[in-house]
Structure formats: C-alpha cells, structure tokens
Image (cartoon, rainbow, N blue to C red; front, side):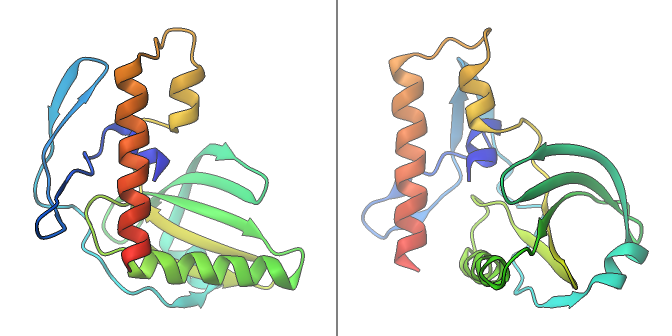
Length: 173
C-alpha cells in the first residue's frame, strides 16, 4: 500500500453512494498525474509454486530494500521481460510461514488496480518468495523523511486519507 501511495499510483477516492473505487487524478507535491484506467497487471489468485521454478523463470536485478522479515529485489521475468518486485521472506519459525500464507491470502482478495498486485509465489525449504507488481517511487516513509521533502498539512491529509480508504477497502473484503 505504501509503495502505491508514495509513487502516486492512484487516489483511493470512492463514490460514497455505491462504494465503487474509481481512478482519478493524483496531486503529489503540486504535480498532477493522470492515471491510466487500464491496470497493467490483472488480478489473479496466486497459489504457491515450487521454488525451483522461480530460479528458472526470473533474473534478480538489484536489491530495493530490506526489512525485519525479508529482502525485496527488483527482478525480470525471463519469459516476457516484465520488471517485477520479489519479496524474499526467510522462514525461521513455523509462525513465519503462517504469516506469509496469510499475506498471500489477503493479497488474493485485493482485486483493485489501486493495490500492488501479487503475480506469483514460490516456496523453498527455508523461504517464501512473493512476486508482485513493481511500482517505482519508493516507500512513503523514505519520501517523508527525505531532506528535500517538505511535508505540508495537505500532504498529511492526502496520505492519511489514502491509507484510511485502503484500510476500509480491505476490511470490506
């Protein structure tokens, strides 16, 4: 969610009458960006595949970031040339696998162009790899703490509103 917000992927405004989300314009740091109404990645229900398939199908390009639970790399699909992101999560405990399966299940429910789409998932004995749509622009946190970013009251309203709408959308599912 945060990647989509930071990159200005879409405004999560909704038509309150029928609760249908719609693509609109986004203003980010005084730039207005019109979003393509046709999402590049169609929603799909992802099943976990054997990790060996990942190695033969994708090329790892560079590391995008690292968190407590895993590492995210930019990858290239060797079959069609698509640039994607892959989150590698180390499975230290049984609970780690449960969390990954839960995340995959939630992402399978998020059928909206406003959310980063899960493309595939793979399992090796000690890790799960989640392949998802790559969104340029970085994380919201990185944008906000950058020295050159001036956080205005409008920016705060914009971010919080998008986060709340995203949470509402997810909880409705």
